[in-house]
Structures are given as C-alpha cells and as structure tokens.
Length: 186
Image (tube, rainbow, N blue to C red; front, top):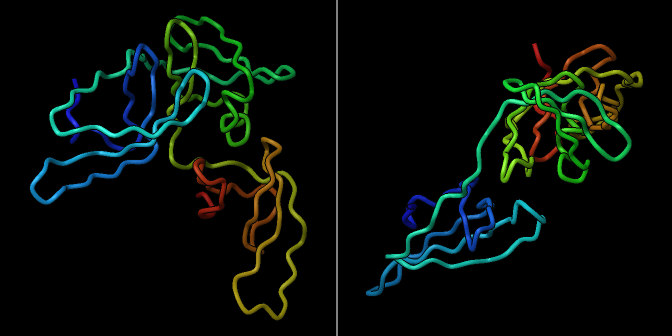
C-alpha cells in the first residue's frame, strides 16, 4: 500500500479495480491540520482524467499492472502489431492507445508495455528517442533575431521542427512527452 508521500508523477495506482497513472501531483500542508495531496489521475483503460485528493492517513493500493518488453512490428490500418519478447505472443493495439509509439518509434523498436488483465493498456516510454530524418528541406540562413527552425519528416512519418543545420540522414533526439527536438543524436 502507498502512503500519500509515495504518490509521485507516473506512479500507477488502483482505484476501484481500475488502474490509474498519476499525471500531476501537489502536496499541501495546512497550518494545524494534516497534509493533503491533490493529484490528477489518468484512467489507463479509457483515457479519462480525474482530480482526487488524499488525506494524511489514507492508503492507496498499487495497480496490478505488469510490465513486459515488446517489439513494435508493424502498423496495420488503425492497429499496431506488437510482440512480447519473452513469450513471442502477439498483440494488436489500437493506434489511439499507442499514439506515441506510432509517432516516435520506428518498426523493430523495443519498448516497455503495461499489461492489465492480459491486455496492453499503455507504455512506459523513455523520455527521449533517437530517430532518423528522412526528409529535410535545405535550410537557408537569413536575418533571424532568434533561432531559426524548419520542418523535417522523421522515419516514422512524424513532422517536427528542428534547427537549420539538420539534414536528411541525420539522427535527432526527440522528447516523447512534448514531441520537440532536443539535440542531434550521435
């Protein structure tokens, strides 16, 4: 069981038999009263978001979610085909459940899947990923007051803004949480 001080961003908890992920966390200490924690929770089954407050002595159950290494095989219409790296079992996951996987991970990538009741309900993604640039326009230097950027297409088909010095064939590091360029990958 978790206490309120164990709740942090990305913690998985169980409320009424449903797994939730903590997306925002705020700890408040009242003058004479006890502390409270206000959290924003994302339902991992349907994607809805709820606000919840927990008091000082409340205990929260951890979610019964297992993690498994899976390989992203291919995209088939509105589904992604994934394979468990241990059991070689294959899963079909809707793109809206695996949106970030489709955007930032090329086919053949290994990622960590969250499994609840023998079903993939989400992913533990790394904070950033290196992806190859497949299309880039020639960057033109000009009179810019700040850093100039241009759109490029990644090997996954996603379009992002990058600095002018990036060219086709370069690998760039992208933040999977925001979709923004971080740096050129080595």
